[in-house]
Length: 193
Image (cartoon, rainbow, N blue to C red; front, side):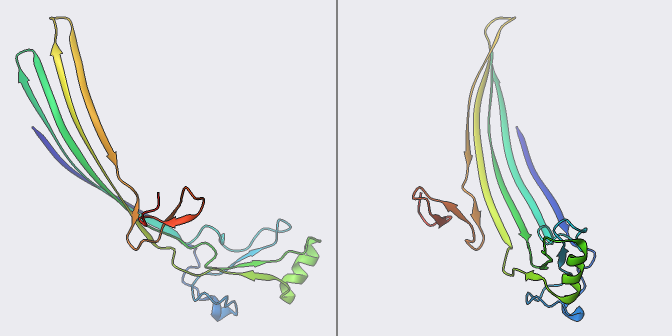
């Protein structure tokens, strides 16, 4: 008999070097109440200033719990093996695109025009705010039965069957949706298939 338990955890996050700077203290209040300077985008005429507005801050913690039991029984010319496994996966993540804001200097003209627009405040500002925190769960299970049958001294037949279950994705606060057969988005777990 072989009984095992396992646990793994992976954590990663990405923040800008200015993630402790309050933009409102510099006159750059975009209304999100979040820290970190906005990206200033010159649309290719000049290099952008600041960290990308579309990729940070973001992070995740992934955890996997696993339990399995395998049993081996030898009888005559048979070696029977059977067992099962259970897995629980949890991912807690956030991806706050545009929470820092984006100042877009889009003149489609010369570098001088871009700089003039920037210094005179002729720019388009955008920022998003909201809850991007999601904690998703998924369970899985499997069972197997196997027989290694020694037909002759030189021939062994290996026969077996395995069943696996991959459970549906769920979210702690029911904050995920999926495309239904009617072409509309539905909350996962709402009974629509």
